[in-house]
Length: 206
Image (cartoon, rainbow, N blue to C red):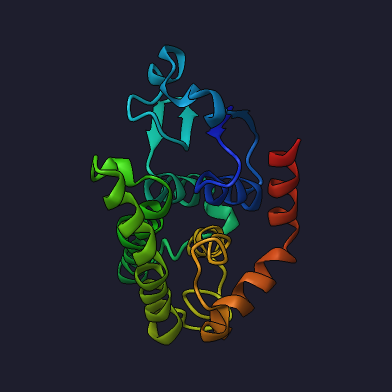
């Protein structure tokens, strides 16, 4: 059985939704950031990076959201969560998820985790001021050219969609003008109606 380590409000939600969409049998375990549980010896033995998500499988532990999403799509091909039959399209999905991971999420992290990049408190404040611009620019690119239809890759729902939904949940906190992102917000609304999304969100609140 799969086991997902998560914390509410984090990118772990993307993998949680994907597990639901795949019809996977899994359990979840919450990591409490308020008590710094992510840096406890017990959790560091699972994920030495001290971050969520982490996914325990029968072959070992996976970290990093793009890798976990690809694993879920490939491990449950009947769910058709990725264009596994088409190497180029699958690479397009991977490229989108990599952009969210390496660029958009990092821009967001400058608002709440400036200590990763600097030690001067004044630097933290400057980073926070920049976030609406940097996150906004990332989402503007998605709005203009990367969101190809009702779903990220067009007409078919894939592992890209729960990841985009997860990061789009943070837009208000990041100070981004939502009126500039009608297609992204439409996607977020469609995602919120999916049973798997509602189930995953409900599980994380319990």
